[in-house]
Image 1 (tube, one colour):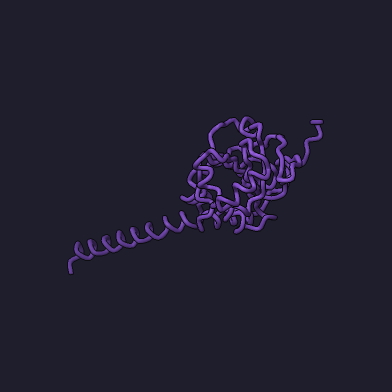
Image 2: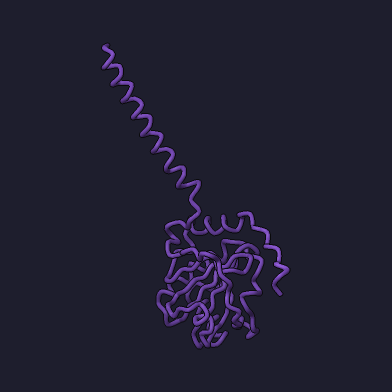
Length: 203
C-alpha cells in the first residue's frame, strides 16, 4: 500500500472517530448538563433575576386569609385559574396529579380560583373536573392577577424555598407528564444556597 493511500485511510479513520465522539458528547451534555425545563414545560420561563412575590392576601377553603409568604421553605407552584377559562379547566387535572405525585413538604401546588364563586362552589367544581385533591384557594377580587401584572389565564408561577419567584408560565402546561414531574422533583433536591448575610448598613 502506498504512503498516500495509507495516509488517506488514516485521515478517514480519524474523521469517523471524530464524528462519533461529537455524536456521543452532544447528547450527553444535553441530557446531563442542561438545567432548563423539559418540552412538557416549555412554557415555563425562568424569572431572572428571581423577584419577590407580592404580599397579597387571599383565602383558603375555610375562608381564612393566607399569603404566599406562608408557604416559604419549600417550592410552590401557584396557579391562577377560573371556571370560565377553558384552558384552565383542562389543566386542572394535570395540576392535581402533580400535587399527588410530589411530597407537599418539597413542592406544594396552590391553585387559586380568581372567579367569584364561593369556597363550596370552588371545591365542588374541582371535584367535578378531576381535581378534587387540590386545596381550595380564592382570590375573588383579582388582587393576585394585578400583582403579577397579567390578566391572561391560566397563569402559573414557580416560587423557590426562599419565597422568591423563579419561573412563570402563561397558558396551560403538561404538569403531570413524567418528564415534568421528574424535573420538578429534581429542583427540590438541588442544594439550596445559604441566605445572604444582612447588610448592617441598611435598616
